[in-house]
Length: 229
Image 1: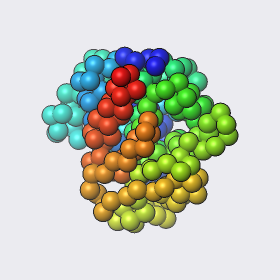
Image 2: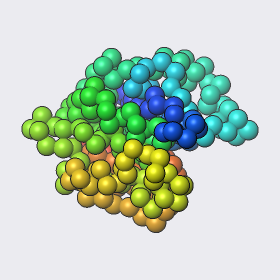
Image 3: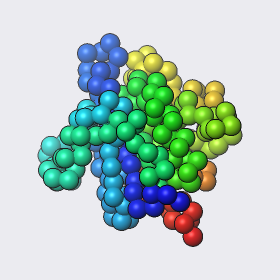
Image 4: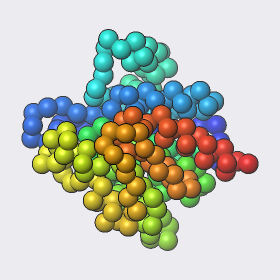
């Protein structure tokens, strides 16, 4: 498998929460957990976003020492300031590509044809495609070279309809992610609200909510290791 020592974390570039006047972005804890697990597993971790450059982040807690240390890390800071656009990335260069969530993801990730192509290329090169919370929005229109949807017939988890209702967002988001994935043929695998939950279907690994991010990254590492054996 190409790119055995490299991983990529993909982030939304969308910063407006519909017509609410509130901001959104990539969910900080999901990015932090993905980066931590992947770097501890020995990967060189790159960052990408739909528009490139500095992406918006949400749920950043300056008083949290983990958040502060992460954002102050010079390597992290440099890569966040200059995230790559999907068109600048070669999918075969990465063993793992993990898409973080945050509500912004449902606005821009499904619309980006270059991102869909990147995820297809990672998967077809033998890499692991992972996503958590709203990150599976990036999978909605990913088709493989045979024209089938990547998620068709696969077990997939994501931020559930019940969770969307619980946070009062069903009338704000452009679509309900679980419904859209199901319409693409995904076999939805969800747990009770806000409980960590991961669905593993070979080299496709998805998680339900922010508390699932660490386990998603760990399972992605495990699946990548199994490919190499």
